[in-house]
Image: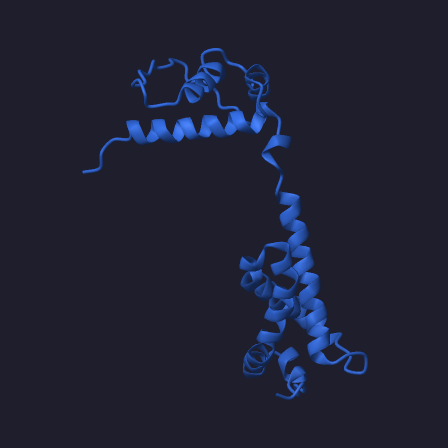
Length: 180
């Protein structure tokens, strides 16, 4: 298939047919460039969204980016690949900025206010493992912080969080009201 695309002038003038031809012709190029950056970073599932972001960037501000394309400096496919690469990098940076490990969030931001009138729950014997029951005892009636409970148990804080989560899953499943 030819690298040439002679409809850029019509595209920036707002010709929908030119835009449609452009998208059909260059979507595979853009998608491949995006995937080359995202897949090694473990974000391949974001490729379609990021490819759409490339097209948004191309047509933003009245096709400002497209208007600046210079055929004398690069082939159109090369130029589009560079833009796609840049948008993919921006996406990865945004994802990295949003992804904050839970261990780095202070406990006070993760805590939930206790109910005003706590309800005593009778947990059937054998429902929870001894360690799960102990973790719940430490975190709730004793009101210990996760780090403190981990220190007492001689384990990592993530182990306490994981044990707590597994215990809550079991309790939710046990106390879930049957569906009609």
